[in-house]
Amino acid sequence: MPLDLPPPRESRFGTPLELSRVHWVKPELVVEVTYLTWTEDGLLRQVSYQGERQDKPARQVKRAAPHT
Image 1 (cartoon, rainbow, N blue to C red):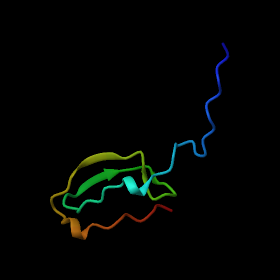
Image 2 (cartoon, helix red, strand yellow):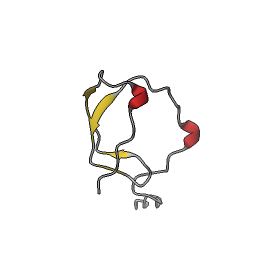
Image 3 (cartoon, rainbow, N blue to C red):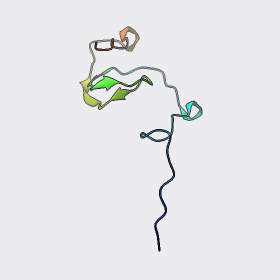
Image 4 (cartoon, rainbow, N blue to C red):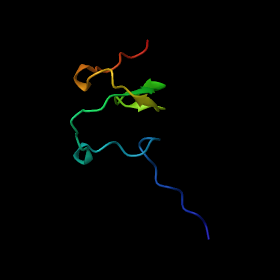
């Protein structure tokens, strides 16, 4: 019995995000992470949790500038 080929995918990372499934939350906690890079979609790649930051209120946190 021959095996069928898997269906082709548009992206090697699977289907794109569906914003209708996103659940927005109010930022209350601040954590520190390390990461490899930002994707073109604005997501972090290879994220590692480093711990909670209690010295900085969530309202003061800004997105890190991309590395050039």
